[in-house]
Length: 126
Image 1 (cartoon, rainbow, N blue to C red):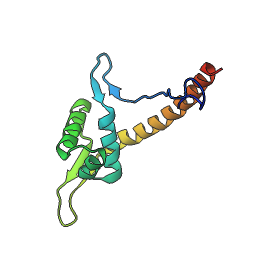
Image 2 (cartoon, rainbow, N blue to C red):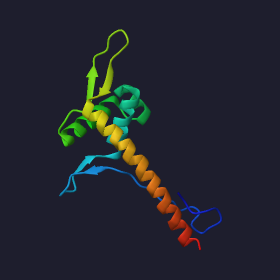
Image 3 (tube, rainbow, N blue to C red):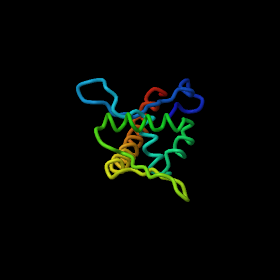
């Protein structure tokens, strides 16, 4: 989502992120990093693999989970200890609902932003 090639806005682009805040305060409930981890755990069913893909430590990943659960007021990830095939981490029903709703929100948001940004750059490049 940038200016067209050859325009004076060619190297200008719109960047944005979605995060959740608590109503009536500036308190962050879920950061982009926490949401990314939630989505990866849903996909990979592993905190370890998700942390590795995000280039963060296992400890940092669990801290993000703990912060998320504390801020939300409910459990989002359920873990099982390793055995022959190793352990796993899966989303709770509430975590799964949140992940699926976020994916839809992100898709809808991206579609809307793409349309609006295209109009914006068409206007300023006249």
